[in-house]
Length: 329
Image (tube, rainbow, N blue to C red):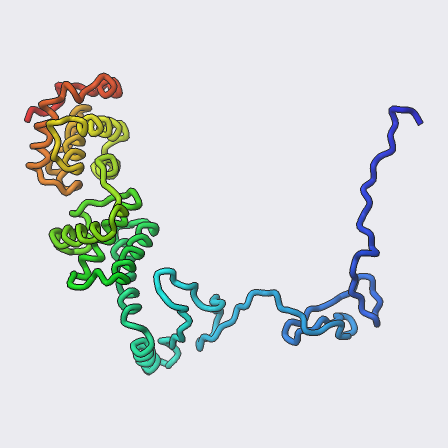
């Protein structure tokens, strides 16, 4: 054999001495037909019927149904535990249907719920349903819904709700949850969503903020600009210019004392007119929830300092950006 030729390396197969085979002692078939009879817990030869083993463990999913109606029931062992509720949550629930329309099952369900559920738990469940319904109406993400539920549970556990309007507490929890998830909403939006007076929401919000400490989040102008520009059908370039204007305006001493919402609205007003795609103060007011007079007064301040705001970086971003397009207040 030459030096260039080498013997090919063969990987040996598994040693049958270490393999466990289950054969039927009657059939002696090397490829046995073994059936697992989970109903009786036996291993049975499918050819002769000889029982080869017993007490086998059923590893299949435990799909069981106790429904009165016929059909498939995809429930396994009940619903998952609700992390927003206390206790083991292993209560028995009487189904509402299955009484052929007599209404007896519904009455039993109501009576059973009143006698077994605690008042604290009933209040939480009702509040959670209301929070979910309100957030679904505005397409608020589930992450914010869960944060709002956690905040409400903390309020309930600490008994901070005494003497407070429950609707205002729910509204304040949604407002805080939006802040903490970096998707803030304005007071006007929360008022329109929950039908709660703005003063009540503000009063409850300040109370919860003092109790929760630093875990209340913050609202900046940039958090609101993207959503307002989208609702006003403004393009991405207008949004970028508005963001640059807002960052510059917040550094000005003349505009100190103005809220982030007022600054954002005035900068949207300036940026839209700067590139010739202006939106009037009323349209911005309807979207942002800021009064027209507030928008115009804030715009008057930033217009007076336009030389400081309209930097070459802003003016060169869009060839349509002209200072002459701005409305003189």
